[in-house]
Image (tube, rainbow, N blue to C red; front, side):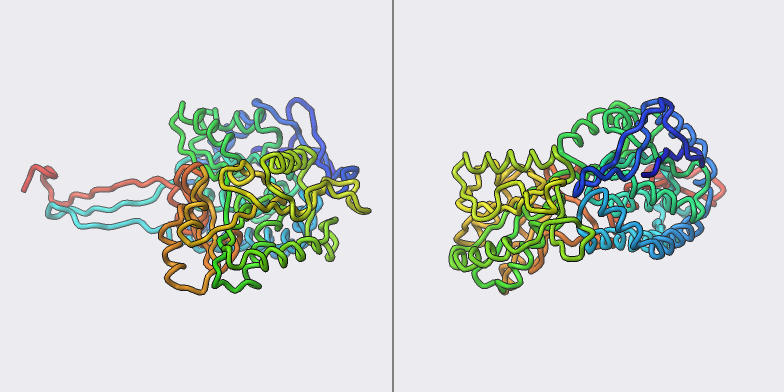
Length: 493
């Protein structure tokens, strides 16, 4: 068991209070991975002060040089990929093939951000006046508060931290207290790669003590948060008092439509991966299956059969298909929704109970669960569960499928399986979501593409791709008049 520390102003330090908390393995709750500082507002204050001081020099480092550091970060992540993946599996439970993918997404993000160091394009446009030059350039914003969830403890922090740094901002990072070890490894890599003192700071602790202290701080210029819609709303309210820039990536209730002309084998593979990958603990997880009535019976028989064969267990074992829920509280939420679904009249076709086989008793395992006879008005068809629960709804047409898919407060990811190109393009046009897959599951984002949603899934910003650099930089408009006389725009003609 290792004792971890905060990293503030280039030094590893304990919380000022001296208090700590434990990080445990959700597949084997008796295993303590490490202890971490239980930080408070005072620790945040020191981290922000150091980040503010470091900003004055970091912002002057040429963007290509900042990109060179991120290139080294990517190289180090490649070398440490297996070590990071195994640590991640131990602290959050998902299987090794997924944690390796989580690290790979961080690697891809590092290399993509590094290349943007030579591509932080501005604009030059003609002036309406003679002998005058107009341009718009990107400048850093300041201190970035980064607050991340536990389900992608490497990928999501890199989505935020790498573009923040590339644009010339400094960072105060609060990772999820369920997955602090992976976050600590990321910061260690950033330091090894040559990020200067004070540019990146990590403060461990709870959301109410550390996260909100970052959001409230007057010297934090922007907040990037991924988590629940409820917490996102609270962050937005608090940050508005100081007019902070805020990016929110929140919940989802994603659906996969399977039309009667679909490749059913492909659609079956897609829904199994989308619904039960990461134990359903993804904001993009396939929580609803909208299944055309003409293929309903056959598809359901195959889906139930395949689901019952999925193997639950320790994610470090290559034979495991599905790991545990992140902790006891999350498993109770899943069980609560299973009870709600039954009370609402839905029928359990597979799973529906806590897993208690050998190898599962010491962790927070829940059987992959499928509900049938679900109607769009049921809570299990409308509310985010964040667990291995799939609600199946029978549909008669594409129009009905799109209507049901859109009928939630969320709009993150979506999917349609069809061989009809016309139906595919109608779905792309009519689905209200930030992401639409055709003949692919609702999960599978790529690092160089925009990521985010509509409605209560977020507040309009996007992570990933070229769009994230918009959030982490300011536009400065520059006018250069070399006429040698006073010229008045919109007055002189």
